Length: 162
Image (cartoon, rainbow, N blue to C red; front, side):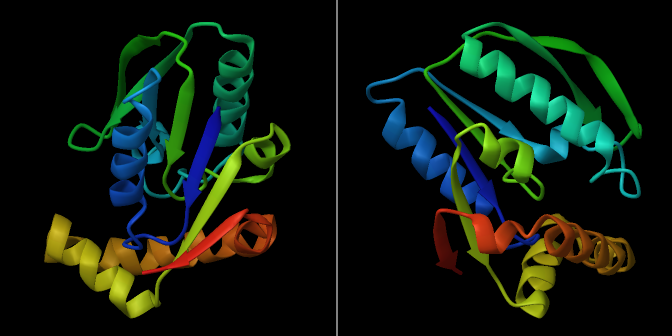
């Protein structure tokens, strides 16, 4: 099973992923992959490179094969060493860009969580620090452009509001 949880920053995607992981791991093997680990920094996060990586992850999951990811180190602003991810029965992709077309086309059950921009911004700043305000304002424009082009919200199976 493939699940993808998407929506603006600060909408509660990680919280929902943790709840679903807890529910599914009672009877299945589960892996959660956070998009924050796959982004290539702030400006290059929602790139074709991310889409290609998601395609590789999704195809490997569907085939029951191992795959590798390199987690982005935000303090160093670079990717770490490749990490082997073994096959699981349930794979949850969580974060901005998780439910993009390539993932939807692979048959994922997709979740969209809506949040007002000012509430999402405040939640992120409360969680991660006020020093990120300017970067988050730019990020909101990047994510909005991505969502508009991809039509993510319109194409998700389950729509929630936080």
